[in-house]
Length: 284
Image (tube, rainbow, N blue to C red; front, side, top):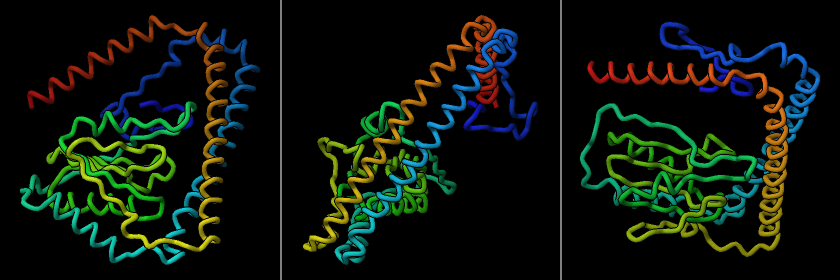
């Protein structure tokens, strides 16, 4: 893993379990010091741009939270209807399926990232090859991520290993779920990763748990919050894109003073060690 800023990672068991690869051993410090002022200036600008990006991301989440309160505050959302939908899906997915393990595990990943190029989703590469997909449609705030989490908890209770894919903007929420032993996925089809159903897929729409909202005032509040959410996301991506350009500039100050032959030798040595470790684990 990359242990450099902003995702600093300290080894917990250095030497025994963790190995530190220091690429600083392969640079010409004298040459880099000649670019000291430029490097400091670019790093300062990168920090400034990311600070603004994080501010807009926080604002985007706040406005999305506002959107998600719309159906409960208006009284349109029916918890009873939602519970019935969750129960029906649970029965359809798990009835007649045998327990797989008494020690099920959940792996937690991301299918979508907020990048300099915008919101990028790799959902199709994750679920496209599976035998079946349950696609949850509906507006924000109608319980889609709650439904995915309930199904994950049920899968674990019934002894199935799962992979949960979290929301890039709000990592506490689970957007998608893969139940490997059943070769199926539960997909939250929502902006920016709407998913087109394929043959054999099952679509459940949480809007079936919502009564029509006729209040123009409520509708205007929701639409305003959604518009501000999108504007904040656009601004955040713009700042991240500018930070990426500055990072590319920063790399130009280092490239001429790096010993890439030495780095390649370290890479080959590390790869050999990893393969040897895998082989030893197979023998055990």
